[in-house]
Length: 144
Image 1 (cartoon, rainbow, N blue to C red):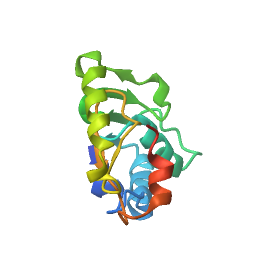
Image 2: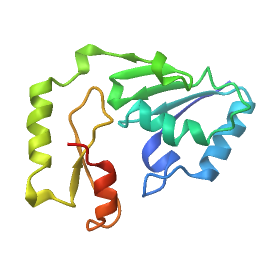
Image 3: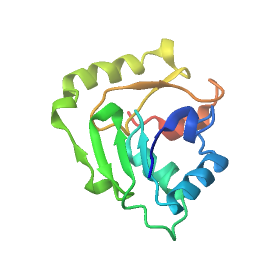
């Protein structure tokens, strides 16, 4: 039995952060062969649940799938992300997060970067995927 470890961005997803059906089909095939699988990402566990786990075959038992999210701060097994552990030693303090939020809100960055509110341990901004002038995308993702 082999242990397969997959980085999420650019492996499980395309350049627009959309799951690759071809790669997910390969993962399902490996899973059916009883191979050990792991997903590693800087993304949040909520993002994994919404974008990757929701695309996997629901008929399969994914409880043995190892996952590491937010660059190692969150670890868990299986698609029930609420059971995963958040390592408090890796959590960025609220005042650092507040300072980063303020930076992301500067007019100079409007349409270029956005605050990533899905991260539990990190204070991050991301470049806007797609067209920087896509106001609908910004409205959908800006929460502060």
